[in-house]
Length: 112
Length: 114
Figure (spheres, each protein chain N blue to C red):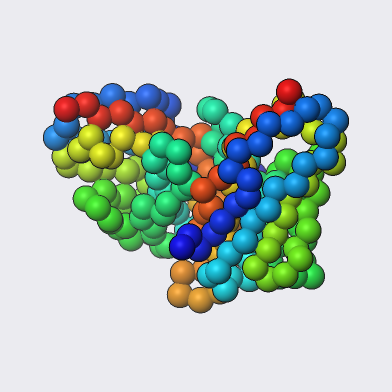
Protein backbone atom coordinates (compact mmCIF):
# COMPACT_ATOMS: atom_id res chain seq x y z
CA UNK A 1 0.00 0.00 0.00
CA UNK A 2 0.87 3.66 -0.13
CA UNK A 3 3.27 4.92 2.49
CA UNK A 4 5.45 7.86 3.48
CA UNK A 5 8.81 7.61 5.20
CA UNK A 6 10.50 10.61 6.72
CA UNK A 7 13.67 10.98 8.69
CA UNK A 8 13.43 10.42 12.39
CA UNK A 9 14.05 13.25 14.77
CA UNK A 10 14.52 15.14 16.75
CA UNK A 11 16.50 17.51 14.60
CA UNK A 12 18.31 20.12 16.66
CA UNK A 13 19.78 23.17 14.94
CA UNK A 14 21.14 26.58 15.78
CA UNK A 15 19.43 29.66 14.43
CA UNK A 16 20.39 30.46 10.81
CA UNK A 17 21.48 26.88 10.09
CA UNK A 18 20.42 25.04 6.94
CA UNK A 19 17.59 22.55 7.30
CA UNK A 20 16.86 19.38 5.37
CA UNK A 21 14.17 16.90 6.38
CA UNK A 22 14.07 13.88 4.09
CA UNK A 23 10.83 12.38 2.85
CA UNK A 24 10.32 9.48 0.46
CA UNK A 25 7.09 7.88 -0.61
CA UNK A 26 5.67 4.69 -2.07
CA UNK A 27 2.58 5.03 -4.24
CA UNK A 28 1.31 4.06 -7.64
CA UNK A 29 0.59 6.74 -10.17
CA UNK A 30 1.16 10.40 -9.43
CA UNK A 31 0.14 11.37 -5.93
CA UNK A 32 0.03 14.91 -4.63
CA UNK A 33 2.63 15.61 -1.95
CA UNK A 34 2.41 17.85 1.08
CA UNK A 35 4.33 19.17 4.03
CA UNK A 36 2.29 20.04 7.11
CA UNK A 37 3.60 21.76 10.23
CA UNK A 38 2.32 21.41 13.78
CA UNK A 39 3.34 24.11 16.24
CA UNK A 40 3.19 23.23 19.95
CA UNK A 41 -0.38 22.86 21.17
CA UNK A 42 -1.91 23.47 17.77
CA UNK A 43 -3.40 21.55 14.88
CA UNK A 44 -1.70 20.88 11.58
CA UNK A 45 -1.24 23.64 9.01
CA UNK A 46 -0.38 23.15 5.37
CA UNK A 47 3.14 24.42 4.76
CA UNK A 48 3.53 23.64 1.06
CA UNK A 49 2.44 21.23 -1.62
CA UNK A 50 3.23 19.90 -5.08
CA UNK A 51 0.84 18.12 -7.38
CA UNK A 52 3.05 16.84 -10.20
CA UNK A 53 6.59 15.76 -10.91
CA UNK A 54 9.25 18.51 -10.83
CA UNK A 55 6.88 20.96 -9.15
CA UNK A 56 8.47 23.00 -6.38
CA UNK A 57 6.34 24.02 -3.45
CA UNK A 58 7.48 26.97 -1.37
CA UNK A 59 6.24 28.97 1.59
CA UNK A 60 7.79 30.98 4.45
CA UNK A 61 11.30 30.25 3.15
CA UNK A 62 10.70 26.49 3.02
CA UNK A 63 10.96 24.59 -0.27
CA UNK A 64 10.41 21.06 -1.49
CA UNK A 65 10.64 19.61 -4.99
CA UNK A 66 8.57 16.65 -6.21
CA UNK A 67 11.11 14.16 -7.55
CA UNK A 68 9.38 11.29 -9.33
CA UNK A 69 12.63 9.50 -10.21
CA UNK A 70 13.69 9.24 -6.57
CA UNK A 71 10.14 9.26 -5.12
CA UNK A 72 11.20 12.05 -2.78
CA UNK A 73 9.91 15.36 -1.47
CA UNK A 74 12.61 16.67 0.84
CA UNK A 75 11.93 19.82 2.87
CA UNK A 76 14.63 22.51 2.94
CA UNK A 77 15.14 25.94 4.42
CA UNK A 78 18.26 28.01 4.05
CA UNK A 79 18.20 29.73 7.44
CA UNK A 80 16.00 28.46 10.24
CA UNK A 81 14.61 30.58 13.04
CA UNK A 82 13.61 29.74 16.59
CA UNK A 83 9.99 30.20 15.52
CA UNK A 84 10.37 27.27 13.09
CA UNK A 85 10.52 24.86 16.02
CA UNK A 86 7.65 22.45 15.40
CA UNK A 87 6.78 18.98 14.18
CA UNK A 88 6.85 18.56 10.40
CA UNK A 89 4.80 15.93 8.58
CA UNK A 90 5.21 14.75 5.03
CA UNK A 91 2.02 13.40 3.45
CA UNK A 92 0.59 12.16 0.19
CA UNK A 93 -2.82 11.99 -1.42
CA UNK A 94 -3.48 9.74 -4.37
CA UNK A 95 -6.72 11.30 -5.51
CA UNK A 96 -8.27 14.69 -5.12
CA UNK A 97 -10.18 14.92 -1.90
CA UNK A 98 -9.10 11.57 -0.50
CA UNK A 99 -7.57 11.11 2.89
CA UNK A 100 -3.93 11.93 3.46
CA UNK A 101 -1.30 9.34 4.27
CA UNK A 102 1.19 10.79 6.73
CA UNK A 103 4.75 10.08 7.68
CA UNK A 104 5.51 9.75 11.37
CA UNK A 105 6.63 13.34 11.77
CA UNK A 106 9.98 14.99 12.47
CA UNK A 107 10.47 17.26 15.45
CA UNK A 108 12.62 20.30 14.78
CA UNK A 109 14.11 22.28 17.63
CA UNK A 110 15.94 25.52 16.84
CA UNK A 111 17.97 27.29 19.50
CA UNK A 112 19.25 30.86 19.49
CA UNK B 1 -13.09 32.63 14.47
CA UNK B 2 -11.58 29.28 13.66
CA UNK B 3 -12.84 27.56 10.52
CA UNK B 4 -12.69 24.07 12.04
CA UNK B 5 -13.56 23.69 15.70
CA UNK B 6 -13.43 20.68 17.96
CA UNK B 7 -15.05 20.10 21.32
CA UNK B 8 -13.98 19.27 23.90
CA UNK B 9 -10.32 20.27 23.68
CA UNK B 10 -9.37 17.98 26.53
CA UNK B 11 -11.18 15.03 28.05
CA UNK B 12 -10.32 12.50 30.71
CA UNK B 13 -12.55 9.48 31.01
CA UNK B 14 -12.60 5.97 32.39
CA UNK B 15 -12.44 2.60 30.70
CA UNK B 16 -15.83 1.47 29.41
CA UNK B 17 -17.38 4.91 29.11
CA UNK B 18 -18.95 6.15 25.89
CA UNK B 19 -17.37 9.32 24.59
CA UNK B 20 -18.32 11.67 21.78
CA UNK B 21 -15.96 14.13 20.14
CA UNK B 22 -17.51 16.82 18.00
CA UNK B 23 -16.28 18.72 14.98
CA UNK B 24 -17.85 21.71 13.27
CA UNK B 25 -16.68 23.67 10.25
CA UNK B 26 -17.61 26.93 8.62
CA UNK B 27 -15.59 26.40 5.44
CA UNK B 28 -18.51 24.99 3.49
CA UNK B 29 -16.55 21.85 2.68
CA UNK B 30 -18.25 18.59 1.80
CA UNK B 31 -15.49 16.29 2.95
CA UNK B 32 -14.61 15.65 6.58
CA UNK B 33 -12.13 13.33 8.26
CA UNK B 34 -11.16 12.04 11.68
CA UNK B 35 -7.53 11.19 12.46
CA UNK B 36 -5.73 10.14 15.59
CA UNK B 37 -2.16 11.10 16.41
CA UNK B 38 0.08 8.98 18.56
CA UNK B 39 3.70 9.86 19.42
CA UNK B 40 6.06 8.40 16.84
CA UNK B 41 3.23 7.13 14.63
CA UNK B 42 2.08 10.26 12.82
CA UNK B 43 -1.60 10.63 12.00
CA UNK B 44 -3.82 7.70 11.08
CA UNK B 45 -7.24 7.89 9.48
CA UNK B 46 -10.21 6.64 11.51
CA UNK B 47 -13.22 7.58 9.35
CA UNK B 48 -14.07 9.94 6.55
CA UNK B 49 -17.19 11.31 4.92
CA UNK B 50 -17.57 12.83 1.47
CA UNK B 51 -21.08 14.12 2.12
CA UNK B 52 -23.92 13.72 4.61
CA UNK B 53 -24.98 10.33 3.23
CA UNK B 54 -21.48 8.96 2.77
CA UNK B 55 -19.44 7.38 5.58
CA UNK B 56 -16.27 5.36 5.05
CA UNK B 57 -13.95 3.44 7.32
CA UNK B 58 -10.32 4.41 7.48
CA UNK B 59 -7.23 2.53 8.53
CA UNK B 60 -8.12 2.14 12.22
CA UNK B 61 -11.93 2.26 12.58
CA UNK B 62 -12.35 -0.59 15.09
CA UNK B 63 -13.78 0.68 18.36
CA UNK B 64 -15.01 3.92 16.80
CA UNK B 65 -18.17 5.12 15.09
CA UNK B 66 -19.11 8.41 13.43
CA UNK B 67 -22.14 10.47 12.62
CA UNK B 68 -22.45 13.15 9.95
CA UNK B 69 -25.34 15.18 11.30
CA UNK B 70 -25.07 17.92 8.71
CA UNK B 71 -22.62 19.15 6.13
CA UNK B 72 -20.88 21.16 8.81
CA UNK B 73 -20.84 18.60 11.63
CA UNK B 74 -19.02 15.31 11.99
CA UNK B 75 -18.89 13.50 15.34
CA UNK B 76 -16.64 10.68 16.47
CA UNK B 77 -17.78 8.25 19.16
CA UNK B 78 -15.88 5.75 21.23
CA UNK B 79 -18.50 3.16 22.16
CA UNK B 80 -16.59 1.75 25.11
CA UNK B 81 -13.34 3.61 25.69
CA UNK B 82 -10.15 1.68 26.44
CA UNK B 83 -6.73 2.98 27.54
CA UNK B 84 -5.06 2.43 24.16
CA UNK B 85 -7.46 4.96 22.68
CA UNK B 86 -5.62 7.63 24.62
CA UNK B 87 -4.42 9.96 21.86
CA UNK B 88 -4.75 13.32 20.19
CA UNK B 89 -7.71 13.38 17.79
CA UNK B 90 -7.97 15.71 14.83
CA UNK B 91 -10.85 16.59 12.58
CA UNK B 92 -10.10 17.86 9.07
CA UNK B 93 -12.05 19.10 6.07
CA UNK B 94 -11.45 19.47 2.37
CA UNK B 95 -13.47 20.89 -0.46
CA UNK B 96 -13.99 20.37 -4.15
CA UNK B 97 -12.40 23.13 -6.12
CA UNK B 98 -9.09 24.81 -6.68
CA UNK B 99 -7.21 22.87 -4.03
CA UNK B 100 -9.20 19.68 -3.53
CA UNK B 101 -6.32 17.83 -1.91
CA UNK B 102 -5.64 20.41 0.78
CA UNK B 103 -7.05 19.54 4.16
CA UNK B 104 -7.76 22.00 6.95
CA UNK B 105 -7.34 20.76 10.50
CA UNK B 106 -9.02 21.59 13.75
CA UNK B 107 -6.99 22.26 16.92
CA UNK B 108 -7.36 18.73 18.21
CA UNK B 109 -8.92 16.97 21.20
CA UNK B 110 -6.62 15.39 23.73
CA UNK B 111 -8.34 12.28 25.10
CA UNK B 112 -7.08 10.31 28.09
CA UNK B 113 -8.69 7.00 28.99
CA UNK B 114 -7.85 5.77 32.47
